[in-house]
Image (cartoon, rainbow, N blue to C red; front, side, top):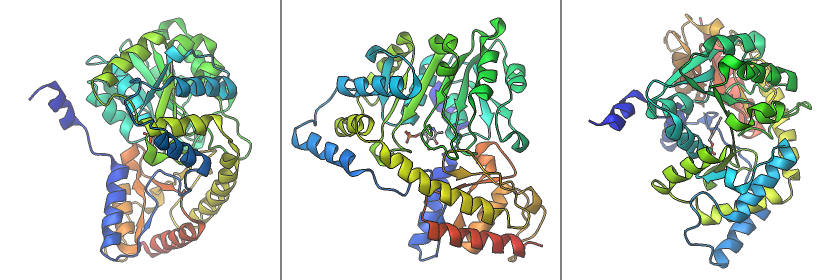
Length: 402
Ligand code: PLP
């Protein structure tokens, strides 16, 4: 087998997709299942964005486009970066891909050599480590702590950097913890990367949940907080989450031109351009009205508060209140070693999640999938009624543990 096949043997299928698939299968068999595993909003894509896609179809925008994005979309992305993040990128510094996942994948494939290390604060999104390994790199997790709000600490970052470190893969608000950073907290991290001994380290920031922040928390991105990092930062973002466009598949990034060119070269030999229709919808998403985001966030915040409060009433669970995203990440340390009503010993968070699914029909993702145990992730991007019922079932499940 070749290098790539060997790499493939080192990775796992996405755990979040696996749990969602299992929940869907059980549902199809007639079981009463509430799925809290999928990382996507239950809200529909805004009408003006759908209309832009219909118009694109009617106007024959159905051909190949430039590999890494139509000029109109690159212009809209440059304007977004300027307007929302104070970042100046030229169109030649923008890449557009089929989802943020592809942009990340491209960036890591283009830059990693065997043995290069990528620092990943954990708990972390399931795909980071596997994509790093596919690229021949070595993921280096830094464990964050619940007491620190699951935020990466500057001293831990500094300690983890070696001469082989290529990237820090940063994500805030975070999937799975919802943790976000103030300007000062982020500056403490960028200061570490500005130290002369750390100047070989690049920042790959995944800003996918930028707009999903509550309680007046403000968003900052690393190159904005530390302009000195601009030349070694890739600022990645996308439309899936805040714009409720998971199925449309569109992500983008701004960064140094040579890296953007390399990404385009790789994409030209794999998927080529993202869907032309999606790109025209994305132009409308970025340039059109943004007020639906605030409306959706008000609903998300209410759901977050409901879930945090109900989970904190479940025996053995401890659930911090996250600043952003649409996830909560309760610790289930207090349930480990106990036995469920059907006699299953909860030896770890995977046993917690599978037994909860079997006994109460609630699908959550176990913390081990995010390299953060013992805990589990709940996506509250689902109806309030289902959330209430799911949390009642979780309370019952925990209450029955002996
Ligand atoms: N980054 C994070 C942290 C995510 O949670 C996700 C999706 O779950 C992505 C990137 C990828 O998003 P997409 O490929 O849908 O743009």
